[in-house]
Amino acid sequence: MKKRITFTSAGKLVFDVFLFLIFFLPFYWMVLTSIKTMGETLKMPPSFWVSNPQWENFVTAFNAIPFLNMLKNSLIVVFGTLFCQCITVIPAAYAFARYEFKGSKFLFGVTLATMMIPAQLIFLPVFLLFSQLGLINSYWSLILPSASSAFAIFMLRQTFKQVPEELLEAARLDNASEWTILRRIMLPIARPTVVTLALLTFISSWNDYFWPLVLTTNNTVRTLPVGIAALKAAEGGIKYHILMAGNVLLVIPVLAAFFIAQKQVIRAFTYMGEK
Amino acid sequence: MYKIELRNITKSYGGNPPVIENLNLGIKEGSFTVLLGPSGCGKSTILRMIAGLETVTQGDIFMDGISVRDTAPGDRQIAMVFQNYALYPTMTVRENMEFGLKNSKIPKEERDKRIQEISEMVGLTEYLDRKPQHLSGGQRQRVALARAIVKKPAVFLMDEPLSNLDAKLRNQIRTDLIELYRKLGTTFVYVTHDQVEAMSMGTDIVLLEKGVIRQSTTPNEIYQHPANVFTAKFIGSPPMNVLDASAFTELGVSLPEGTRYVGFRPEIAMVASSITGLTGDYVAMEGDLLAREMLGDQTLYKVQTPYGIVHVKIFDDWGVGYGKVTIVVKKSNLFFFDQQEQAIA
Image (tube, rainbow over all chains, first blue to last red; front, side, top):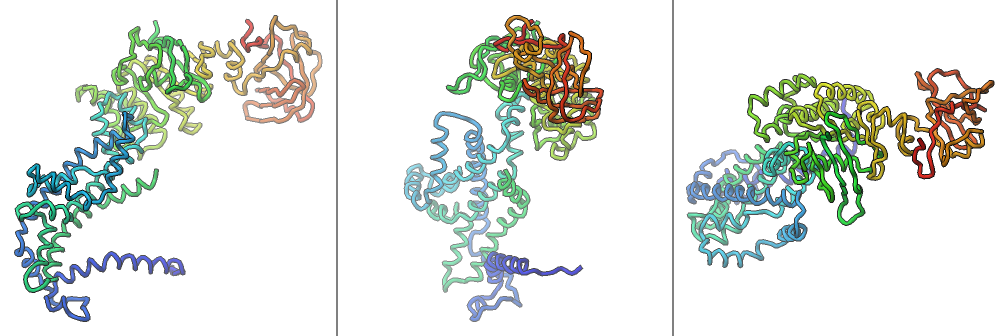
């Protein structure tokens, strides 16, 4: 059977290709640059293919900074942040979704309002506070600023709110404590949302450049993005191929996390759309 | 002795006028008590107060003579079946049944034994490892029942458990419920707006309207001796014909003192094209046939009489044609109601 290509389907195809290129090209350019020689990176017109890939660029990038130490720092900060968000976000979201308590609306409003304050506005007071507490150059200084997330509280609250009240009543009749209800009923239902939020936190925490730059001054606690950025500062101009090799190394864990969580993320977004 | 007793119960939400005011109700041990009434009559609220899912504004609830006002829902020895089943979607059928038992710290061996026994009883053995979303409506209904039975509660509470099923399945589960009740012998409290469900399953019917008990008695009694016009019209299908007393005075029927309304059931009336040779035991009224519904085993007639619309249900159809018809009712089958719509004995 022959497929007829209609005008609209052709238009859709062109649009899809366009979207794909928008997302794919920068990524392709990063990977491509990371395996070029320095000469090739500066060539005009630029080449879109590399016949002789320079794999040793990755080794150079790896050796130019205390990579393993920074990787360890990044992992500690990311998982520390995830852990802190779990213990702050989940109970808060459950309380906002399911309890009527005095001032709950006001507190929820305040929580949402914090989303509107840009980090650049509060970094100075946070820095002063942390320096007085002696937290500068510690892991805590990198974990605490994002130990909770108003966005995550909001999203999880919406998901919790969608759970039918009868389900909770059934659980109460089944002699379940609030903790059991949260752990055995609410969280399993909200699983796609939780995984998605964890992934978003993972990405933003992993990629965070601003807070480590502000709150740390030495490499013992600095995270990978700061280290990768430092590759720029090498002598003799910016070595784009080394910088991009570093970026590829930086991005790999994010991609891996996304591929693992992909199914849940898609389910979370379709679930939000349903209702 | 009453298994459950509600004494002077008042329920209001916020500052609004109460939906239930000073209600007294006793539910007998081992009875299948049906709380029946139109939507908004407070029947579900009463059930939820018994379950402990709603607080009691005033008054007290007793189970086995002990106040449960301050007892948590989980400690009341009850199990509830919800209209939408409220199955835990992320758990399998087995886990759904096991959840309450685990929370009550029942040992693993006992749990497995009970789940095995009950799933066989309701025919769910092969579905134990499925999640609710992979079950049909009827199967979900059975899981909801199984989850309640497995707890071995002292009282079953059911909130319109059949209303999400199609008519055929509803009839089937209705008989299943009667069997189940007879097998378990525990107290059932069942909420419905469907008088057929109430009449067919209940041993006791509590008919409610706007938070007030209109009549509380056995199905037979409520059908044979409705206490008021509301009850008379709610029980039976089509509802009882209730006409102004003046119609019957005009037709030469001598009425008891104070009669304001006279009623008769569609199924005891007769309809014919013409009637001759009536004895004094009968009363006849003429009218125009508006509609005729042939239902197989029965035929429904809707007749416009000078006194109002009258429904008649006939089991042996004589094929009465459209046009002028006569309705005949035996005088001893008439019900009399006074100015306050209460039955005159």
